Image (cartoon, rainbow, N blue to C red; front, side, top):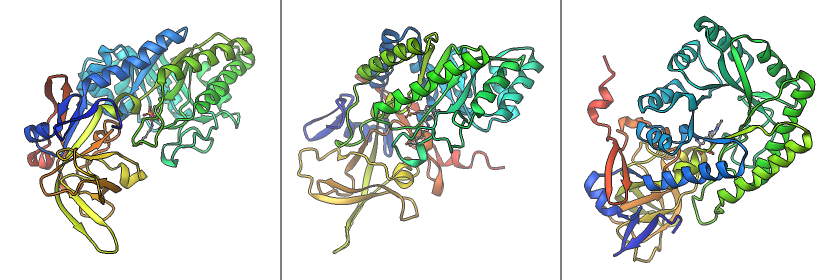
Length: 429
Ligand code: LLP
């Protein structure tokens, strides 16, 4: 099985030890399932290993991967901080009682209203993306008589070898200020001049779904030597270094399984050695894992509605969800592992495209999937959907979004209820 929280019993697929066919019957489909124990386990892998291997460190859950109040509660209980990228995420974190001092506020186009809202919520840190935002943060903090703690977002000029839409650390990026062009030095110098910005360090994120350890080492090297440059040229020693998103996850058998604990230990040794060599204080290390906290804790269940075979072309299986609950194949051609949950014992010899219910041909969950021949009413399970599915869902075609049901051993409960038709019209005046 693609992940060890997935198994089979009596021809049925189990997730988090629970019969997915029964859960589909109880809650209806499409249905997002989240394995709470897996979320907690993933949080602990980062928390425990970062505590153990770095002199000082804190993992921040990148909540763009899945933002809902229950997740913020769980993550807070596990002792992580969180990264929010919008006032909406910040609002949900606050509603969930997330400790505001451990919230880091990202975004490359924060409005004055966003900045004011975050300050009034008492957000811990701003991650300031650009010079315009820097001035706005100083002004709005000044109006409130505070010094706002902040990191500056820099681009280290690294190609992370992932797909283009999620590669963010290259010099040519809409995010951050490049080191290579000399602009990052001016950015830091400007921040140090401001009375209402309390600069604590620097941030870089090079990309998502990264498996190559060298990417993390290279990022750390560039950032540490920039910290050394800052010390030499400006007399400023950054006390925090944020290395951005976490490790890649396994969507299919061909993806490697990353031993995150081992990777973190190696990165920590690398940073210790680099800091010593450069003669700088070892900074507190922050990381922002999103995908690797929630992806494999999620599964989506659908009901098959129809199948067809076009001779000489291909076969299709149509399900009762689609790009509205999972736009990742339509957007990025993302790979997934798919099972027919009520026919696990049967031979998977029907190769098909799993299509959604939306009115466009690009609405596909996956192509070239081998399943036992599906029939109307069968339950189709897409694995590893905990990250960037619910958080990227839409109401295209006025399709209500599925609920999130949490699994906690024998217990299952609704964290987010299913959207209703009434919800669809609720904002219309
Ligand atoms: N920090 C920053 C500044 C980020 O931009 C991201 C992801 C993360 C942390 C979290 O990275 P992770 O640990 O999840 O790899 N919608 C795309 C992914 C976009 C990622 C954007 N930034 C997808 O569905 O694959």
